[in-house]
Structure formats: C-alpha cells, structure tokens
Image 1 (spheres, rainbow, N blue to C red):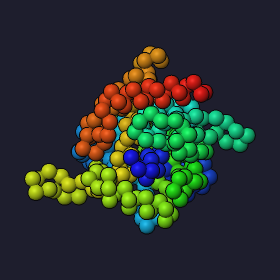
Image 2: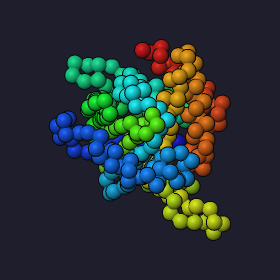
Image 3: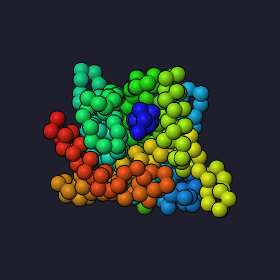
Length: 291
C-alpha cells in the first residue's frame, strides 16, 4: 500500500469557521436531517446514511450524515471523550497505534499510520491531533481535532463531529474530514491512482455500466469516500460493543467492523478476516502495553 493511502487514512476533518461557542447549536444539523429525509430512507447502503465528497486543486473533503440506533446520551458519553477515540481509530486497518494524553495546554491524540500488516511503530507515520470538545448541551454536542502537518507536504488536518437526538431514541450523526496537500502530496496521489489504486472505486454513482450495474466514482474522491466509510463504521462498531461485557468489547468491535466493511466489499475489501483480526489483536495489545 502506498504512502498516499496512509495519508488518506488519517481520519476525519472539516473546514468550518467557528464563532463563539454560544452561537453553535443543533439547528443547522436538525435542518440537514429534514433535508436529507428521502436520501436517508432510500439509498445504496441499506442503512440510514448519506455520503458525500469534494475535491479541489489543493484539498479533499468527505462527509457522512447518518441516523444511528443508539440514544443521544449514550453517544455523547461514548464519543465526546478523547480517550475513547483511540478505541475507535484503532479499528481502521491503517491505524497502528493511538494514545490520548494531556499536556499543559491541550488534550492530544498521537496516531500512527501504517500498512495493512503488523509493523514496528518506527516504520509508521505519526501525527499529533489537538482535541477540543467544542460544545455539549442536552440535545447537541460537537468536537474537533486538528493537526497542522502530515507526511508528504500534507497539512491542516481537521476533524469535526456533531450529533443530536432524533425520533425513537436514535441519534443523527455528522462526521466530516478534510486536509490540504502540496506538490509532493499531489505527485503521490497521481502515482497511486496510476498503479495499485487504478481499479478501486468509491460510493458515489456516476452512471451505469454496459451490463446495467452502477458505475462508481474513481480517483481521489473514491479514496476519500472509502476511508470516510471505514471510519464511520468504526464509530458504529465502537457503539455497538458498549452493551457487551468490557472484557469482550474488543473482539465485538473487531468482528463488527470487519462484517460491516464486508457488506461493501467492492469498495472496502482489503484483508481476509483472519489476517485483520490477528493484526488488530496484536496492535491493541501493543497499544495497551505502551499505556
């Protein structure tokens, strides 16, 4: 797997201008929930989910809106906590290690990105994300993470996640990610897409193939969409395992994530089940031992 794919695997982010925290509320998110009603009910994902992506000459963005079958209070406790994010992120096949700690000024998540097999952390790329809980109210929370620099001239990694309760004890979740890149990053993209990434696709339907099957978007937006979905499914897997006994939660998360990604094998299949499970068990053990 190329270094470029590791870059794209880093996480979620958003470009958003923040005013005072008192100006941030669930009103825009609830409006989006109403706007996307039809797409959430009828889509290719067989779940209440809407995915979108964008690219420009210097940055990339992917986002997911989804209704999840967990009450808002539980989602707030689970996701509005930096320590829990390491249990989410480690589910992604390219995340090799994650550690949340507090320095004098900020809460920081150290994240190491690597290849699709177990490897020494010295061979992985490390990013430092500053974590901030933006706002928490009885019916809304938002959080952000940001990292100024990444490998291969990438920069301005930003993470934004927000949630609000909706009908029947469920939660409407919005996750967005984006980052900027320079010349080195652009060349890495071009090299990947011309070689091992040339046949891979995302989720946006661009038309129909001669056999009547959907034609999916390719290129860099395909990469962004695949990783957006992988991280969303990691969030879902983490939440799904919370009802399990603590000692069984890791295995529940790993199995859930693999099964969920395998539902979208055309886009997301990279590893066989046993290979993924063995790799992740070892990485989690290393992560726990280091902390």
